[in-house]
Length: 438
Ligand SMILES: Cc1cc2nc3c(=O)[nH]c(=O)nc-3n(C[C@H](O)[C@H](O)[C@H](O)COP(=O)(O)O)c2cc1C
Ligand code: SF4
Ligand code: SF4
Image 1 (tube, rainbow, N blue to C red):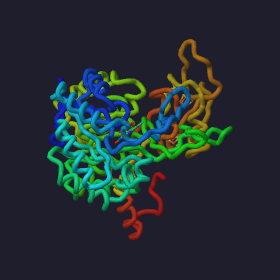
Image 2: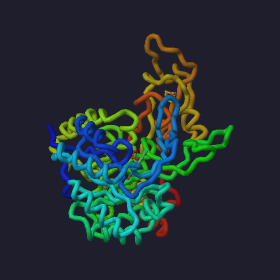
Image 3: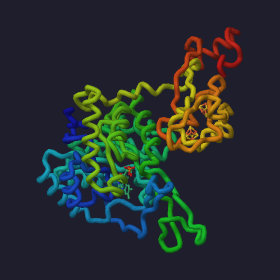
Image 4: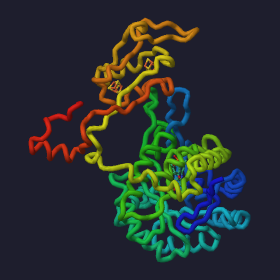
């Protein structure tokens, strides 16, 4: 069995699965339940000066029968007293000394940072997470993403925290910025021990077309919220890779955003994350999901002969390169497995109208596409003209049958050539104006 234990910037936990700061990490009762279920760490719901929350607070984007593909909230930091939170952190740490408890903080003045960092440390927190990411409510008061969006301010405030902190400091980054590495580099310059990303993305999930008020509705109005859940995973993965691949960042990364399975977690770790945090999936399915996450990650590591997280971490980072260095001579084509095709013709419509018009509808008998017993006989069946296929993947993306359309690598006979090489050979007249198989 692989070793899932984790040392993240000096914060130790029995596994890399942490509850992200949010509703599931609001109380000691929840932290106890999370650890009983098997989570390795809890990042406490952000603590700061008293706030008042609104009702209602959440909305979701559903896709067909899949609920909460994306999740939106207009909730602020904790609405419980700092005293209660720090008392409960101490209680949780006493009962779970081997598990990580990280105090998330959001404050305004230098003095407040000094006071709350001392209180979190006295409570026994293993680390601090500075919340610069909240996109609503707090930024209007010069906190949250108002800090995270300005690297110079982030650097100054992180500098205060580093002056006062005696335990590891994680800077949580907002994705609501053009280039997240600017904030990550600022955290590094300020001496932070680690970064975590992403917080939520500015969003409006829907508009009621009778009242014209988006959800979540507060009276007859709403507000911009923060988006998270499965829909944000690609954005989070991209930002994690950008930070992991930037030598000027060079900090441990706690990956957050749309994680709900061991596979999601493994992808974040392969792109450079040292731990992963989960919020929406726990709000959707409960703490119990960590069981399958731990089991799945363990089995995956074993199947690859990896003995621990270090063997996986960062393995995919260098596989993401600038587009202009990719090989223009590489080619894949789509191939359809007629034994599993259900004849929906979605691939035909997609290629015909949205791609490169290289799928024909042909008489099944003409290509010997035998149909198994009990299957509906098709009048026409899709067939790819491989010579014309550019390998865009669209048909494979739309096909509803797993594995029915697969992309196959084919030899082009052309030597490898990047866009940069193509440009210089073009200038020298060594290549025709378009690549040979385009
Ligand atoms: C209702 C709600 C409240 C949240 N509150 C906080 C918070 O207080 N502090 C914080 O740093 N992040 C907060 N977050 C952001 C999460 O910690 C996390 O960064 C984000 O939801 C992305 O992860 P996910 O896709 O697993 O939910 C909150 C998220 C949600 C959904
Ligand atoms: S990969 Fe693209 S171009 Fe090729 S058949 Fe599919 S949709 Fe058409
Ligand atoms: S989308 Fe898939 S199942 Fe539908 S016709 Fe094309 S190959 Fe067959």
